[in-house]
Length: 387
Image (cartoon, rainbow, N blue to C red):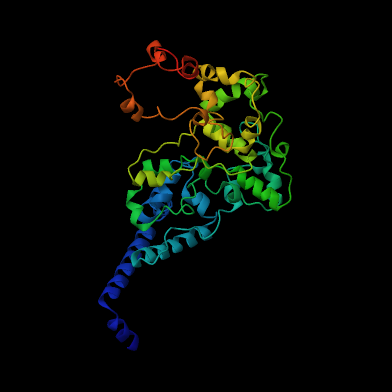
């Protein structure tokens, strides 16, 4: 009688929640047992998981991942009827938390995916190298040292969205396949990072020499050509500096910050275009100390008499000069303090010089013989070409 009395004294809102939870739980269990095997299959599908509002981020990232053909329970529920029954009971508990709004966001996994789940599809004894054949990864040796699969591959299915703190209650309704795709587009969250390998090797006092993990064919074919160092590497870097950074970032004494950008999730919510940040190969060469080791050396072309002719050379390929030099001093260039403004006056930079010019000039006027009636032709022609 006392318990009944205390229940009646509970706030109406709380009594309603208890009623709602009890009703939902009973309906769920009744439906589950009524449908039998069919109900077991239906409630074990990945689509059923997505019916929970809070799991939408996990569902849509999984859907566009490399594991999209593997059902959620294949990884998150260990084999056996006992484990499956336990998972169903835990599902009812989560239903209670959802109804009472007592769950914790972002959703975190209670424990890591066990190696056995991965081994149900992947044979670790035969996984020695990558598909490209460049990386040597003896998975069996890593397992012998008790290295968990998730220590390297934790982002393969969901792109580490919980760790990235992008799964908040207020944003669940905004998740769809497009957002899932944008979140999984950044490889640094889905693929093993070299940083992980290096940190683990150092901690365990294992060699970090390139040949320990890379085959003898680790150098691209372009790097083996005779003209690569002195002639072609700049042109290749201009086309694919992001690819260059995959290896050369680890050769720099300082961190490479040029590729730092807003997360794709932030861009999506701000209705901004989701695209990879563009980095120029010239700026990259100025930040990476590995590049500076060569670029700090005076080129053979900068011999005696070069100052008089450098303007003509710059007009041939201005971008080559910008690999080491800048137009003006910004303080960011660690490669060379010599800039165009170091020698050339800045009085005719921008729009102001046209306004102060004694003779009115058209807006798009170019250098011509007329200019040399007043100006020094040799000095001007070192930078300017006649039109």
